[in-house]
Image 1: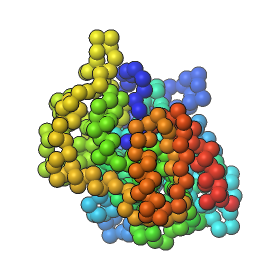
Image 2: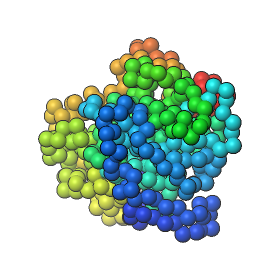
Image 3: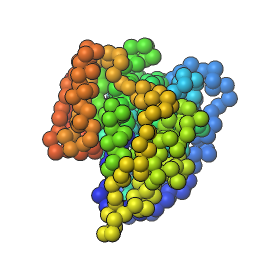
Image 4: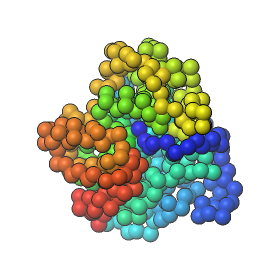
Length: 414
């Protein structure tokens, strides 16, 4: 999951395969191009399945820069990983190098960035967008780019996975913790391979950070680091507003106008694991007629489609009632129960300390005590920061000072 929808409706310009940005009077005045997925995303070099996970399959320099990423040099990458069904897949992402910063003697440390919900289709791959989130250039939401830029300018290499099925063939296995964790670890491996190809010294020490769906991914990564991540040295994890305890959050979100469109993405996440999954057992009357559109729309497109169709007399979005976003028996099928189990990030002790940033004005605040109790029982070294008055997105913006101090303490850049 990612952020709460902006108050009021926002009818957005559809992003085409290639977007050229005209000069404006803002800091984002440079021409920006979003490359076609046909030229990079839809196929891997022959023989890729024989390569080990983390293998860098191909890369390209991204010359279009975004102001928030000033001081970094970006590369779009494709690499081998293992998907939700444990089969080899190829995935994509971005890797950023700090410019003009000499590498420490032991090499640059790495920090992974795990993004929040962007969609479940190819248009939702963050690496397609210079500002690292799928929105038109007329209204770019660059909070994630700001985070990546700040981390990179601290002197880290930053690896930013798209996750399985985002931009590449197949469905995105939305909220599947194991797939997200493997995507993250293998993105770090690919970033190290790229550094070697470029003649940049690089360390095996790293940290993982993420927000919302990416906060869940970061926690999953910390649990997999000791086994799947062998050969790398994870030093710490930052999870901002992690998407956890989904059995509680799914029905809660489905009762709110700003949250119920997540039901459509969740349905496709279930279908990605179980192709026989029947949408009509899960999706309510507001979602089911347009469920096929969810796999093609990125975040704001999907929200606009649903919210504009369900308004009160004053033009304000309506909260759905029982059966309108979810069926009243949404959690009764084996497919849904399998999905819920696969979202769990509370089964294995994390490697290294974990910092959780959580706003009090966020639905996920209601799950914080449960999450804390479960992780503590596993023996995790937890630091919890509650951010009074902050909503879902506020956890990442207001939480930055704590994240910065945490990284400086657990993974000094030099």
